[in-house]
Structures are given as C-alpha cells and as structure tokens.
Length: 266
Image (cartoon, rainbow, N blue to C red; front, side, top):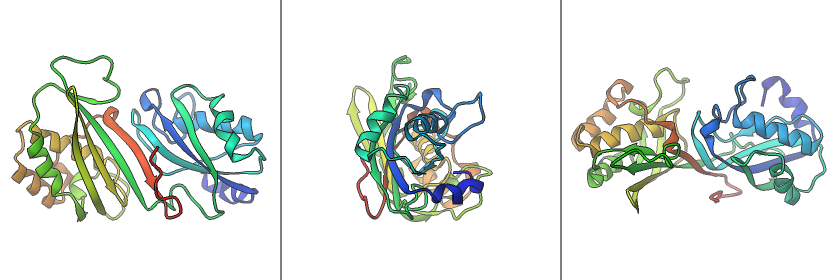
C-alpha cells in the first residue's frame, strides 16, 4: 500500500483479507511494478478494482521475488464495496489469468495487516535429482544432476533450528534489520522419483534467506562443503562465505500464521 494513500484507504468501511495462490513464472515478483513490467499485485489489484468498483491497494504478507511461487500468500485491502466475502473469490477468479487464484476471503478486523500482523511463515523449497533436464519441472524445482547425500544435508539443516543470527544467509546489501530469527522446524523429505522438498517454518525470514540456505546445503549434499564447514559458515555471520543464491523457481510461500487464524495452509 502506497504510504501516501494509507489514511484514505483505511477510511473505507471494510478490511478484506484474501489467501492467494500463484505460479510466479511469468511475473516480476509479487510487489507492484511500473508497466510494462507486470507483477502479481498489478494483476490482482486490477481484478479487484473491477469487482469492488474502486481503486484497490493491497498489503501483502510477503514480497516474493521473480519466479517464486505461493500456495498461501495473504493480502488485505480496504474497500467500500458491498460484495459478500463468500462470493469474492469466485468473482475475482473470473477476471484473473489461470496462474493466479484467490483461494479464500474473510472480513478482517480493522487493525489487521497481512504484513504486520503475521506471527510466522512457512516456505517449501523443491529440488529434483535428474539425469537429464526435465522440461516439465524446470520452472518449479531446482534440478540437480548429481546424487545428493540427504543425511549430510539433514545434519547441516539441523544446526539452523532455534533462535540464531542468520547473517551468513541474508542477502548482500539487503535492508537494515535484525538478522536474528527463530526457525522452529526444518524437514527435508524425499517425495519419490527424485523429488525432494525442504520445509522451513519460522517467525520470520530475511531477504533471500531460504534460497541462500538451500544453495549452501545443496553443496553439502554434493560433497563440496562438509557438514563441519557448513557450521563454520553459519557461525561466521558473513554472507561472503555461503554459496550463491539458489534459483527462485524452487521456492514456494506455503502459509502465513496469524494469532486469530493460526493455520493458513491450503
């Protein structure tokens, strides 16, 4: 939501929250961009404007990057529109392209903010072990062409659970903020046919944090970095020692937690 429009938007009668799923392949991230560049927010606000009969500005739980996907992005907006919330998803979806879908809607409290009210988030990062490139999953998983030592990867990931300074995995030159976060669960799961997923849940994530963790732990799985070296990189609190950022295509915003709506998983 543009800062100069916050008061005008909040003067409206209703605060509506939505859960949104999207394939990020064709979009320049979620956050609104200046045309001709198109982001998910541009497309979603345009559809909501038609349904609500007024300009709509969204606030989002996460500003996913170009090529990043979402199962459970959460947004909110203020409107004087009278459409019942139970009818809103169907009305909006009729105006959206097939790679963006509103999956739920509810009337939120006045003070609710999709971004600032969030108490936690869950991400999934998908890998695929391949002998040759798979054209059908190239936009939805990081394809790895060598065997991965999953037990070594799990040992490295276990070091990250808890409350820590994650400076080694933050984006270089990112916005100034505390690098201390709490990750309470990380699971690396084999899903069959070479597919692997890594689930991470925490109270918040730094910019590029998941992708930088995944790039470094994949190098553990490939034998390029030992588990012990991974621990040294983590303890160094220096982004220069971790691996280059993993591809965006494997990352999915799975769900967002709120005190009044604990489970936003779809």
